[in-house]
Image (cartoon, rainbow, N blue to C red; front, side, top):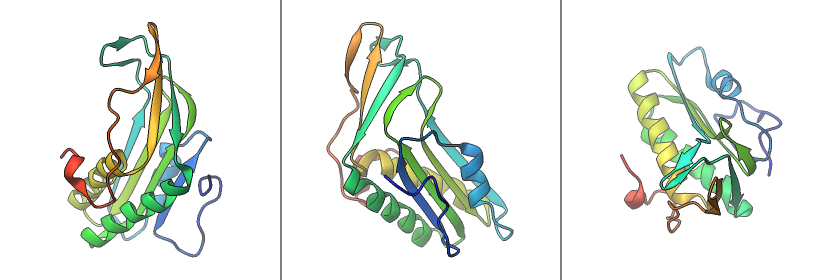
Length: 165
């Protein structure tokens, strides 16, 4: 786990991280904001109080194949920057460990010269994270605990066959 506690140096355009620390939408938006970019889109996935057939969810525990996560997050961010020329900066952060309702588990932030590119790139990033990054969640709810029902095989970065649009 690395990358979240300290900002990347050297004028980098991508900041990816897998962390146990809380992640901040404000920090992500602030880091991607640039004077040449008129659009900033921030997406945060938060822990909700239910899952399909599981009312009363009170916490999620995220686990990851840690050695694979940051390289895959970086490939996703790099692909977004290649696909949309006007992208300024990209943040993709994901938490692991135990999270409670309301906490952010994943944040994607993208800056761009124009809103369309920022929205499309942010959606591409979060959809790709969901399909190609080896992170799993265990749900605890009023009736018990078990792995999330939305688990699937991990696709290679760039293979969008399992992603929703």
